Each structure stands twice: as structure tokens, then as C-alpha cells.
Length: 186
Image (cartoon, rainbow, N blue to C red):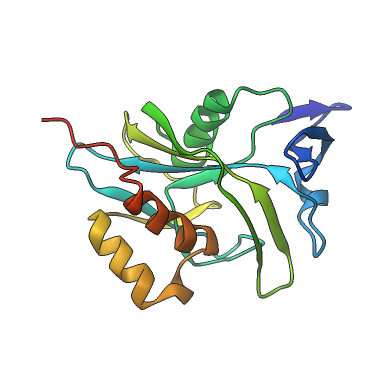
């Protein structure tokens, strides 16, 4: 969160089409039916068994409520180092810490429209990390979570895409094809 004029308000970094920064705006003002391109990230957490953490978005979420998605995602504050933003968001959303953070899809970009008409329009590098503390999900963010086999997750996304976020539908096959999941420690 970035403080502005005494209030705590989350700001996102606005981007031009070529990915250069062009300012910032409040997150709540940006996510509309004509969302401008902005910077985000997605993170996939693995446990010591090589299982992937999927989370179900809380039903109170403004976009894609109740769908299963990657472990967590978010937006770096203007000027915030991406690794710091990921660590901050892991704590805020899942009450946990991450380690072994690796960027695996640096150029991922997507645009998706929710059933409500709200648009996501993001340059969204994708990371994989390991969990380093117990999970304590924030209920306003996450309604459920599950550790799953990566291949089982990929099959589920192919079989029932409507149950998953659009970014997970696109990112998971890319990660599997690129062998973006590091091996489990022995």
C-alpha cells in the first residue's frame, strides 16, 4: 500500500503500449470497463512435495469472484522492487513468506473481460517461489486453497476452464511447456 494525502490507497503503475512507465493511479479507479495497461505480477507457490498452491478467489472479489486461480497475484507500487511487492503480497493475501523466487515468464501480457464488464489489462511477469511459512489466507482475498499436482491442475484447467481465472488458463500451460516449475528439492 502506498500512502497518499493521509489515506492508505493502493496505487498501480500505468504503462504505455511499449511497457514504459507513464504514471500511476489508484487501483480502484483503474479497474473499470476501460482499464488502462498497467503493471502486475502472478506468483505460483510450490511446497516441498512439488505440489502447486491454487487459491479460490473470495466471493466478495470485484472480478472473477469464486474462481480458482494461481497462488496469488498483485501490483507493485510505483517504484517498488518487484521481489518486494511479491513478498508483501504473499504476506497480505496468504499470511506467508516466500523464498527461492524465480521469474519464469518475463513477458506475459494479457487482457481479459469479466462477466461484469470489468477489464484486466496487464503486463504481468510470472514468478514461481517456494512457501517458507504456514498459510494463513486472508478471507476477503481467498475463500479456499488446495495443494495440487501440477499435471492434475493442468488437466482440470483443460476440462473445466470456466472454473479458473483467465490468466491461470493461459499461464499454466505456458509454465508447463517452458518447464517453468523448478524441481522439488531432494
